[in-house]
Image 1 (cartoon, rainbow, N blue to C red):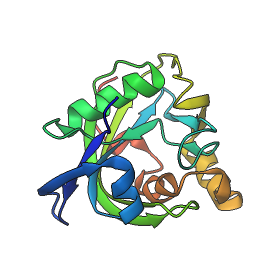
Image 2 (image 1 turned 180 degrees about the vertical axis):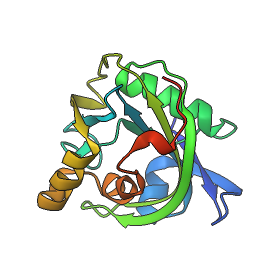
Image 3 (image 1 turned 60 degrees about the vertical axis):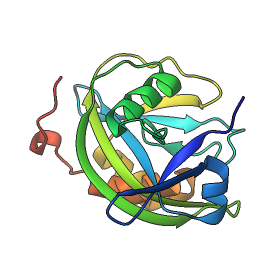
Image 4 (image 1 turned 180 degrees about the horizontal axis):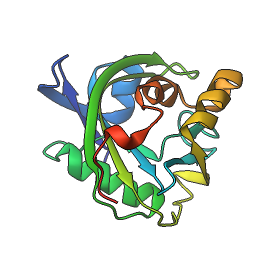
Length: 177
């Protein structure tokens, strides 16, 4: 199996090259990423607990899924692909916002990403890929804010960083049900 390459970008998300995924995280280089938040009809967020043997952040709770576009792949396609690969959900996603972050991880790696964040609303039950996630649950935005304040070490660094941008009410977003 060949190494997975990701898209290196500048601070405006313009591609500057490509590099193997682990090397990018070892060097802390800015690269393109996708983050997916799936809410159910009660506006509760579908969370996943990352598989314990992931190369970073294993066993931590996070947003529904995340990943990286392949070179020449759109962010929309990458987000939908990762949602299928990780959670077994085939949903149409809505792009909601973009952000950049540079977060150190506990194992010496760095998440320096220009992230494209997507939302969806669905009551479909996930079918987890055990190589990606080992548990899932739904939590209200309010419950999550409280849990993150009281016990932040249970969550991935990027989730702790992106989640505060989620409004308490999702009514501001026109998402297909």
